[in-house]
Length: 326
Image 1 (cartoon, one colour):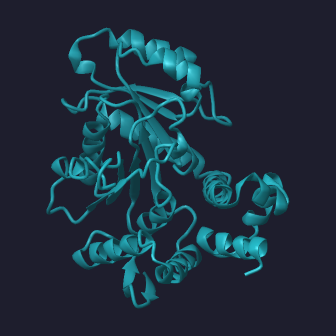
Image 2 (cartoon, helix red, strand yellow):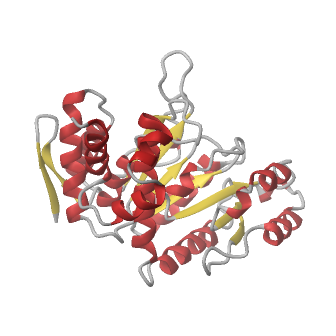
């Protein structure tokens, strides 16, 4: 099945399966369109996202957010997960958010994941993009780009710049958030201060190959992490990405959360909330709290967005028109 998009910028069909050369080319073209900031491209981007919103099932794919402080091995762990999922025949699309260059503004580490995945593997698609100084660790384009990858791949990974006391935006768009920590790295106090241990559904304690008392770290994190997310109990998994130890267990924990979400309409509700979060953030950035209140306040807007057809970009355009009268 395909989503056909005809426009000046994108004259192609976006397949559900992105693991073919033509599919990868279509995905790349779609992401380029969404990253195009010229006014003329915005209408075409909205048409593309509207087509995806109408055609792609709400439970398509599994969006996994991977975050954690710098140096804990997020990229290496992501590479190990990619290889595991590929061994099961699942296609994987990755958005790797990197720090912006202070000079050119581009992604500083854009090639790092390409070293971890086979360049000739059509079942793996990697897009690096700069965070553009976003406070929450993600740039504004991540949510729309996720919609393209959801349509094309079985698993979508969003790897953030690195979690800090406020860098938890990935939790607002991922189905499942995996926090990566390591034994005795001094991060625990900061995690507790920021409430970060209340956020992830799965926590990977990485670098267990270093010979430190990782069992104590696992027990400590399990004791203080959130007891549940609406009925889900946080899973803590020891891993060594370098030695490929615990990767299957980590993938099993991530899959278990996705299975849990897929019952009783939880996943569809979470995706709607993620879309509303993005719309509200974009509106607040453009119009501030005044704009949100003028439209009825956050609670009323969330209810309205849940019942509004079309993509998040179409919803923003309609609300902007209401605010500006143009």
